[in-house]
Amino acid sequence: MRLERRVAEVSRKTVETDIRVRVDLDGAGVSNVESGVAFFDHMLSSFARHGVVDLSVRNGSRTSDEHHVVEDVAIALGGAVDRALGEKRGIRRFGYALVPMDEALAMVVVDVSGRSYFSGDISFRGSRIGGMTSDLIVHFFEAFAINAKMTVHSKLLSGRNDHHKAEALFKALGVAFGMAVQVDPRRRGSIPSEKGVI
Figure 1 (cartoon, helix red, strand yellow):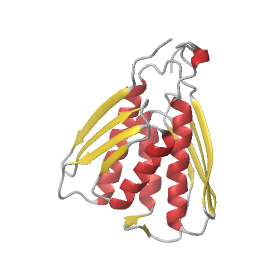
Figure 2: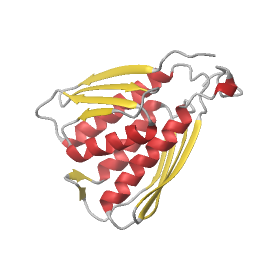
Figure 3: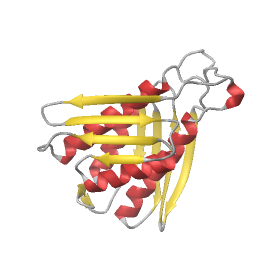
Figure 4: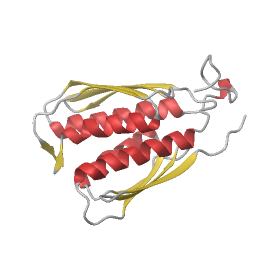
């Protein structure tokens, strides 16, 4: 069964930000990300590349701070993912990844369940990574999971370098997410739930 291409765009304009996110779940891992926070752009591009989804992020605000940018991108991206998935017909639903980045090792497991939940065992040595506040990594994961209506478990199993740990997490999220939203032809377009709805 051939499914329609899964593409969605979400705009989020607030007093602090003017964010536009477009996602193509059937893309090739191409990204064009300009959030205004360079390290965050790098992480989002890693997510897209390893999730094999096309991602575009634009921030039209000139005055927004990094906290609001990261939060609003996560909200818009999660919303775009949820919209692009529609009824979630034919998807694998579950995805998991163990991803190394030199000495760092991250684990991410997702369930595209329609239920929002985030669990994170994540810590960093410093307060900033590449010019971005490190606790915003956890904030992004949580806001993304809530707005994508997914369950996301993430854990850093090892690591010394904060940049490596963050990058391993985003790559692992990409791999797990890409696996979960991949269409399984054996499902023949059915919804992967005994309830018949997600």
